[in-house]
Length: 212
Image (cartoon, rainbow, N blue to C red; front, side):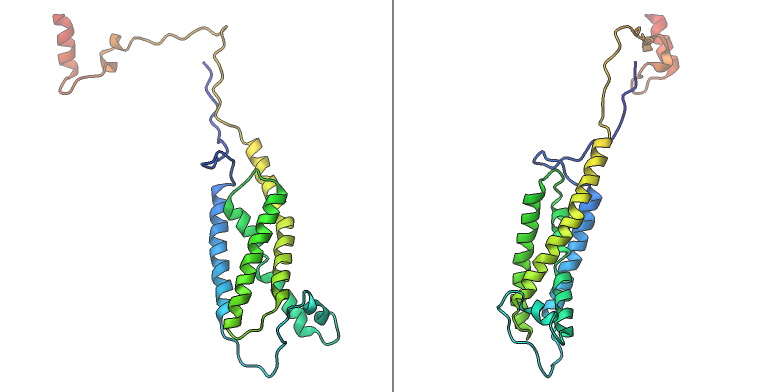
């Protein structure tokens, strides 16, 4: 008789699809919660009064023209901050979702669309804290999330799929017909192996057998 190989099977979601490892999803949820808390604090905090500020910008990528123009140091910092603000959402949102075997295009569009909605909401909330509206903050935030998603998610999912494919499942090999069957000894032949009744001792069991 062969001993079955006991190995870890891939985790399956309730809908029947394979999912990312639980520690990875849990870590992504924790980091996503912390990132949302940081975004809320950065959005709603009051900035000190300044002598001047840029006007509201509704022209796409006008901030980039200021950043690469003469004296655009402040705009360059604004571009870097807008790229980094929502870029982690491009990775954390799909990881928290937990899907493993999904195509890259639906995952990419879902991450970019969710990031665009979140960045738009944050930009609207910033106006209540005394900041001016800048459409480039939304666009650059989406670009940052898209780039980070393409750089991290395909590699991460490919590594998880390789580990899942390399990880064996629980298999029960069929018995070999040529292998002789092993007969087990009758437990009743040994008084010690017989399941005793409540209150029954070895001596009483032997006495019962002698009477029989």
